[in-house]
Image: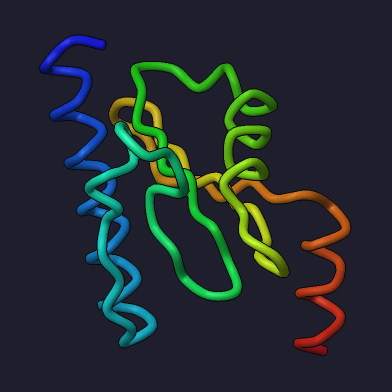
Length: 105
């Protein structure tokens, strides 16, 4: 991975941290040891967030698998991704989405 790709990824993680703080009032931090030790990019209990910022979106299933592997017991995987000049998207398993909608209705 090139330096510009790492910089773009770190910038995306900071963007998501700022969005979470702005809209939810919750301060979250990037996992700075993720490259060395693995794990989620951001933990927002009970969610394990994998953040992807790319020129194009294409590897969603691979990213979801990566997010699932970084989950500790009881955590739920979420991929937050954005292509260049596009809005952020959230990807989660349908069962998780249905449970989320069910609890909020």
